[in-house]
Image (cartoon, rainbow, N blue to C red; front, side, top):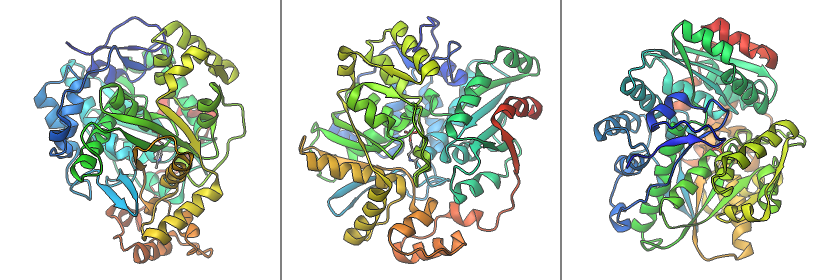
Length: 493
Ligand SMILES: *Cc1c(COP(=O)(O)O)cnc(C)c1O
């Protein structure tokens, strides 16, 4: 039986997976959720023998039920190929006593490549399936990594255009260079004078603007989102949790069926939500440890049941997690409410109007698979340093938030499960802070000098993604106010 996608906020219309991928966001502002979770029926011991593409196929087939096997295989083969600089695509490595799932071997050396390398193919296939001949316009707000990953995925893909908004001054130099040097003819990159939440709210507003939508439909355009709210982003991410589980069985770290924990450096709650989907679909996972940086809204939420975004926004060394409104959390709240869309809509309205909502006792039960943790800036830096000193392995600032959380979780002694740290970015993406942490930065103005030095210290070759931007020309230099975002979109089309 097909899995149907519906809104978290009460709109009763039903969508197939491909329709939901085209639409991105529901008309009532809600997010698409599956009407039920599939039951993975793969043999866990057999799973250990599958490669990444085979695993992705098994997993995605369960959720994207209106795609044919041929269509899915075609998308998977186009996405997970030699664009990745490791043949395992998502290698699981052991350093010291720690397991790391490295999700940074794609084109932009961060985990968003895992989903954004396949989304354009899922989307263009969906358009074909639904006889939709409009040109898709991807609108994306980025806290740094989504932007370039989306640009790389959609660049020069026929029938698509992409406009990316990023917080000017709120992303790393390397992240900004990656975006503003993008060559794709169908791309636009715009710096916004505001933070990530401003960019994201601006994009949501454009999506919800019926008048603008109509105007553009008249010109043959249709909006879609490459943000992590699109189920075409979420579902491909379920695959690497299943894959990592298989690797842990294969290397003898766990037995098939044994519970495994994951620690996930979290911002918009997309990555860790995929782990939750894997668990609900039958993968034997234990705790999902949600690691936040100093913007610890989620830590407070898991502790108290109260979500409160009314606080200072802190710029940290892990900018891709500097987020006060974690959009994908709504999908968890929806399940925690027992799929009560009325209740969920009420909570989201409260979030929108007051910046706060609170779960009642019974609903908090629905959060029991999660454990919230956070790391302050000092801990992030000291963790990078100690991991390096103990193992020679150099982790990035986001991964370090998770590694610090893992230590705290261990120290609490809540269970004996093995734990995998989800490694979301290459240290080459956040070189300056990483080098600072290991005592190798002394104010050199040139990031590339530090990059070369990091290469010597880590004995890991500078990835092609970084070499590419070393001498690239800046092609995008527009900066705008939050209030101008809509006009920019209108005038771009
Ligand atoms: C986006 C991102 C995160 C946060 O992932 P979410 O799915 O938004 O929770 C963590 N680390 C890096 C490097 C990222 O790019």
